[in-house]
Image (cartoon, rainbow, N blue to C red; front, side, top):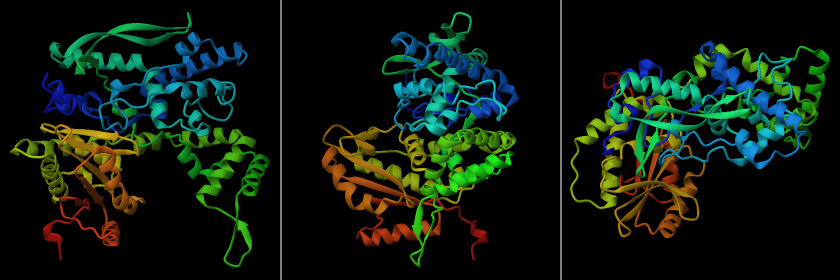
Length: 496
């Protein structure tokens, strides 16, 4: 099947983008991940999904009871795999993988963290005294390495039956039968009576990857967050003392405030006198110690976030246009498909495509969403990846040959190979990158050239990158170094 001109679910399965939007699903990119995540708090906050949230909590309560019954001892290998190990939810195409849809997955460490914390964090699941409900995200507040991607993957696995039925219903109603196949899916629904996960079969849309059929899952937009879960470690650290203020017990609040203050780091002022350090690092360190001494602080933070659930539904749910820029990509792809390319080297092909990408983003078009706000580097990589289809050259992403991954390697055989790096002007290591990484990448990957592309969103960022270029004795030439102006520009009639 020829996928060369296809990017989104709507392209692959010949269905209108508007129909997917009306159904309530995200029209996912199927050439690279979509930078969004399933947030269990959005499932909790939306009455439409209350049953799903209850199922998630019921399963965790079951695991907690099993752990208590087992006396906290290690489970057998078979039980551990059956109850705690789940595959990466790659069929939903969510995350930050630029190359395909395979990320790191949940892994053994996540499963072990969950098991260990069942008798600690989750000991009162279903019997909360402070919070309105139980929340899986509590795990990410105390465990290192448990972030939005793992919470999202675990949640998808626990609501898998709903997502399978949701996708199957859409497929049967709107897709041609040639795009649908029957798949036997493992661990679809948990039977609380038998204590076992049951398998099931579903008729689902599929694509062929490496000569193998792989099903695709649609996910409701209402449960997708853009960067982090509503309850997250970063947010917890940002709201430290505000959380203490919500504690109604005067005596407890005073104790917690004093303990937090006493554990702030010390620093010297300009006169050489010691004072408390209120920097982010110092507050984070003190808050971690306070939580160990007063673990109920976690529950007061969650209660603080629960009270803002209407705000979460309104502001935290991902704006789908900013997930994969469907509209922008359609604009870019339409013009791109009309371009003609002659016999080129990988360098010529990349420069030509970057020039087009640069001209498009710098245009004064009001229909490009990319100018609304700065984007992270990973998302810019996804956007450029979407504009490289139908090339005679391979655009391989995040290739790591020893000393860190390079964003793209463009090649046509081993003798014609170059590299491409996409960076933000605000990147703190930009100068270091311009000075050193080019030669490192050339040596490690046998590259003829490494092209640098730098995006800026403000006058200050433009000035910063120009200063850095002068310091390293380089200049933007739209060959080796591209500067792309992503500032939102005034219309010509408003220019003075």
